Image (cartoon, rainbow, N blue to C red; front, side, top):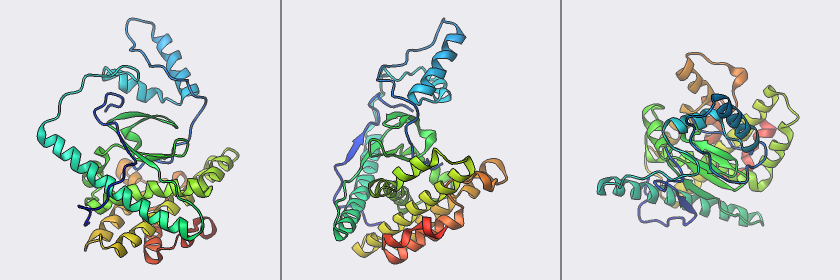
Length: 307
């Protein structure tokens, strides 16, 4: 991918190493329960385990904080309200971090240019999302999240959240290396932002409250595959702008296949449960990315009419 020397987006919030965050392809995150109104979580120690359990359940119900994430965080000696001392980076580590930010900022800028043009051509305005880079844990408008969630989009604060260590997993565990594979991941999450602006996510969030789990999974697949198609629409524009190199599209297709529900379940548990799919199979994700890439027209991405 020919990305160096191109415009970098300024819509990037880098929380890595700040102490505010510490350290699959995540779903869209929606808020659960009421906001806690701020405030940190103090370290457990010396008190009753029943008190800890009560606090953990309360945080889960009212703040959207998963108790397992909280327990993991506490076991590391961290908490959500007190910053931990950070080890200074070596010059080599800093250079790597700077290059990672430059790359992802450039990809974000390319998505901004693509969708701004598409929205303008349809007589509307595109408001670009903010990309949040973090390490291990962070707070979003949709609740407390860890790197285990994978990259995700929060429609409440209109931000994409990404722990860049996911790209290491994408290359090693998912066997989907390459810079365009990484670009596809971001373009998919930006696709969710496009859905948020067009009202798709709002309608899905409202409708799924009245659905069975199986019906909600089926609708979720349509949402995710449309985001894959939108990633393909971006790749079409990227190709026309001259930044796509030989092998790039194959990298994106490899990543799309690697994060299919069937592939992930087969890798993690050795068998698949189609009834639990909520993102789409490898074949579906590849097909919809190809569809968007082939036409470059988001109108061809109507998964709700096709599935």
